[in-house]
Amino acid sequence: MERGNTKHGALLDERMAQETRGNVRGTAGGRAEEWLTPEPAGEDQPEVTFAPGGYGRGVPAGVGSVKGEAFSRFGSYLGLSAFPGNRTALERSARTLHAPDDVMRLLAALPDGETFENAAQAWETSEGRNA
Image (cartoon, rainbow, N blue to C red; front, side, top):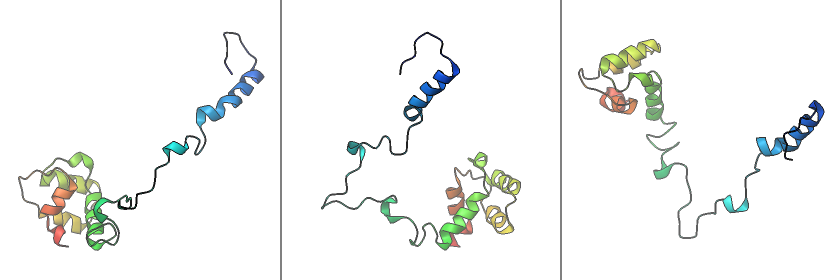
């Protein structure tokens, strides 16, 4: 319903708002047109996966593995503002986030003077990769 330049009462305004509420807010699945639904993989094509290359749970170094969980724990004590940064910056960030002793030991083992772009690079350089 289109409103003109005339003034309406509060009751009429509320009715008009209710009429268009579904269009404004949308409903779950309201935009799911048939042509937007993805088609299944063809007979000669691989199945679709959210983890390319099979990386994920159950993979030796994937999510849920001992190494994967250790890396996740290590990275959770390094703030994003510490990167790129050297060993001193990473240790400062870890102390601020109250890192446990084992994480602090891994950071202390990093070479002095090297700059790390992200937690994965620091993890690979530290002794944690052998955990």
